[in-house]
Length: 283
Image: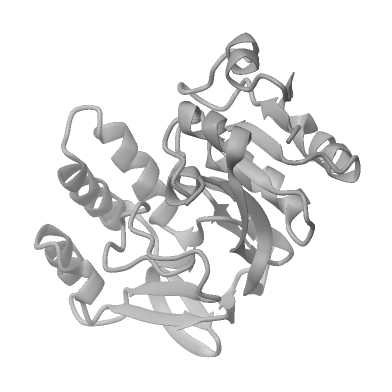
């Protein structure tokens, strides 16, 4: 099996040098590639029918590669070398050494991807205050436990954030945030590592409402008590697709696997079942 591995030099603090990767991925091509060229290089590798395309980077880099490989037969090998590596870990690839082992003898499976207005996401998409909560939490984890950092970040953003008036499949609500996960995420609403499956054909939708009496105070209280996922302020549903619109807006910032893009409204979400071939550890 001979594949190609792209190294994103801007992936984050976990990125490694191409020379190191050439040793670990002996027998495969290892090429340095900046973010602006990654999509084109992946498309060329796909068209050359390489055995797999690997990318050493975080979730943003994996998303970019997946967007080019989804719907085809060339598998993605995610190499966790970025700031956030949730997708690789969900596939059982926790380290670069794990990825090197998989490159030498892994198996191919197909997993679902999420898609919104034509753009692919692997983990989740969101609008409202959710992206800022995640960024703030990860900055605080340098000095606080994860649970404490989550609560502090969420309370801060709810105090400062602006509510959105959203239509979710025609149902109107004022909301602090809307979260759409690729696969079910369990009870940990603010825990990106708590995904249950990548092969169930569903999107996990969470809307944190801001239109009930004392909503701000109740959301903060639920966070402090660790009960936000079960709060009546959180609308939860699983669906293969949905449409989200935002009142008095034509465009809105949308997070895709931690990276923010501006999109036109409405937002049309769908789960594309078994769209992406991935290389994963052998049984």
